[in-house]
Amino acid sequence: MKVIIRRPRREVEMSGSRRVRDLLQELQINPESVLVVRGAELLTPDEVIKDEETVEVVPAISGGAADEV
Image (cartoon, rainbow, N blue to C red; front, side, top):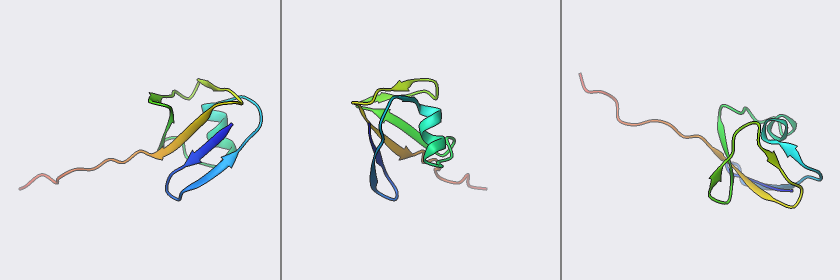
C-alpha cells in the first residue's frame, strides 16, 4: 500500500493489508493526533487497508477563537 503522510510530507510503501490501528502503530504515529483517509472516506481504526490502496495520514487540527472575557 502507499501511505502519504502530511506534516512532515513523506510517502511510504508498505506490503500487505493491515488495519488502520496497526498501520499507525508500525509508523509510530499517535492515532489520536491524525485522521486516515482513503479517497474521500474517513477510516476508523478497525478498517482494513488493502495492499493495492493508497491512504493519506493527515494531522487532526483543532482550535478556534478564544472566548472573550
